[in-house]
Image (tube, rainbow, N blue to C red; front, side, top):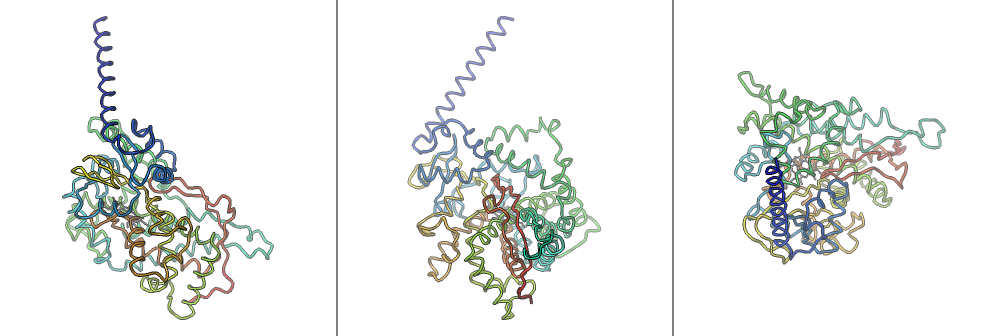
Length: 506
Ligand code: HEM
C-alpha cells in the first residue's frame, strides 16, 4: 500500500514538473509578443473573456494597449490589422484553419463546411455549395425573401403598432422587443431557403421548439471550449460518446436537425423530389446525403443570428442618430414618389440608393455581427505586424479594432456616420469596403457562403420598415441587452412603432 502511495506521489510530481516545463516552453515561444500578462501563461484568460460576453471590446482594448498584434493565449495571438488579415485569410496564403474550428461541430462526430480542417475537403465542399448559396441554381430566391419581409411587416402591423401619443388610449403605450421579432424574420428567411418551408416563427410570434433558447444557452459554452483543443478532443472522443447527450434529442437544435433530415430524405433515394432551390442545388452538385443534412443545419445557425444582429444594430444606430434617420427616410420617400422603389423594393433597386448603401455598410462597420475568433495557423514561420510568429500559432482577429482603423475610416471612426462613404474617391471607397467586408471572412477560401443572401435581406428590410413606420426607443439609456458569444445574443430592444401618417406607399 505504502509503495502504491509513493508511486502515485512520484507520478503526480512528475506530471506537475512536466506540465510546468510545458508551460515555460510555451511561454518562451511567444514571449517576444506583448499582451496581457496572464494570457501568456494560461488560456483561461481567453476563456474568461469569451464567457464574459464582452470579448469584442476586450480584444479592442488589448490592441489599443499592446499594438495591432498581441498575445492572448499560450498559443494565441490576435491581429487587428486589416491588411495582414486579408493576407492571412487570402486564397494563396500559407495559413489553414486552426483546431478551434473542430470545436464548432454541431454534430460532435461529423464535420460540416464550417468545422472541417482539411483544406482539400473544405474546397471540394465549397465548390458543391457555392452555386446554391450564390442563387445561381435557385428559382425564386428573391421572392422567398420578399414573402418573409411581408410576414415581418404583417406581424408588426397586426400586433405591435402603437397609436400616436396624442390619442390617449392604451394602444398608444404599446411596445415591442424588436430584437426578437428581427430574429423571427431571419430564422424564417433561412429556413424557407434551406428547407423549402419557413419554420413559421413570424406566424407563431414565438420561439418555436425552443431553438433560440437552446442556442443562446449552448453557444457561449461551445465557443469557450473550442479555445482549448484538449477539451474539444475530450468532448468529441468516441470513448465518451455513450456518456454525452444526444444532440438529436436536444430541444431546439435536435428539432432543427430532425427537420433537416426530413427535408433531405425527400431529395435522395428512388423517389427523390427534384427542385431548383438551395437544397436541390446541393444535390445536383453531388453533395452526399449526410453532408446535405449537416449543411442544412449549418445554414440555420450561421445565417440567422448574424443577419439578425446586422439588422438590429443598424436599426439601433439609425434610430439614435436623427440626422441619419431623417436623411434615409427622405431618400426612401423620394424613391417611392419617383417610382424607383417597388413594393417590396427589389435588390437591384436598392443598390441604386447611395445613402441606403452607405447606411448598410456603416452599420456593418460599427457592429460586426460575427465575432468568432476565426483563428488560422501558418504552416511555416511568418511575420505579422513586424513580429515573428512561429508556425502553428493560432492567429485570431479583432473585429472591433479592424473596423475602427483611423487610417482607413478617419479620426471620427467611433461615430456612426454613413456620410463617410459618400463623395469619396473610388480608391478610398474600395479600401473601406474591402475592410468592412472582412465581417464576412475573407478571400474566396473562407468567405461567408451566405453573404449574397444576407445583403439581399439588408437591402430590403430597412426600406420596408422605414417607408411605413416611425420607430423610437422606449428607454434610450438601456437600448438593448447584448451579449457577445461569437455571435450576439440580443434582446430587450424595446421600441414603440407608429404608422407614418404621411407615409408614401407604392
Ligand atoms: C450579416 C450576415 C452574416 C455575416 C456577418 C456572416 C459572417 C460569416 C463569417 C465571418 C464566416 C466565417 C468565415 C471563416 O471561417 O473565416 C461565415 C461563414 C459562413 N456563413 Fe456567414 N455570415 C452572415 C450571414 C450568413 C447567411 C445568411 C448564411 C446562410 C444563408 C451564412 C452561411 C455561412 C456558411 C455556410 C459559412 C461557412 C463557410 C465555410 O466554411 O466555408 N452566413 N459567415
